[in-house]
Length: 268
Image (cartoon, rainbow, N blue to C red; front, side, top):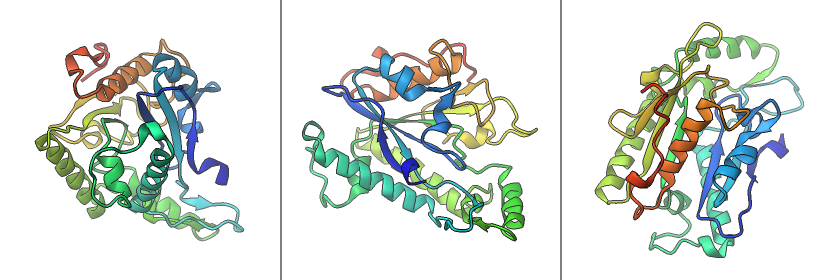
């Protein structure tokens, strides 16, 4: 498990223009989530299309159950995983002379501020901002499994459509996006949702996958498990995500009109 946790650098350009960090979801990990037919696309595809980007994957313990009773279930919350990511990124920036934070950010130990103030954009793939209809099923299953195995039901509870924590997080994120616009430091965002059902259900329906009033939103013709896996650069899904990454990562003085648009063939 330890080899699957933390930051893993996938590309190392000599003079990077920006960093891209891939963060998986529940039940995922930093390698398998982004791999199809042996192709880890952030490393093997994206690094070719964005040669000036330094690319990382981030792994955290996203398991709900542990089938080996010698291993403890990590009781990590969304907040603790986010704090870990920000701490690692802040440490990485401090070690990289060309990427040292030069703006006045107040308390330099505030890792959230250090990272959030330097984010250009975020691309979301099937992110359940307003929960998932399958969360109650997951809660029931993990409760039954807990009779024989160690479980962490909190991870599933947090994704329930009625989760107060999830509601607060979505509202806080929307507020942060508004504030960055007011500060003329907009965080550009793009949202993708699945079109195919997984085991008979849309895991994250389109309305739950985006923050209303912000960014672009489009579909990927896949289910929730495969919408983030691409085997070649000709994949329509890959082309759409690549265009979104290019658009949200452009420098402020470049202008969105110079960025590649979302794949026009994708549904919006």
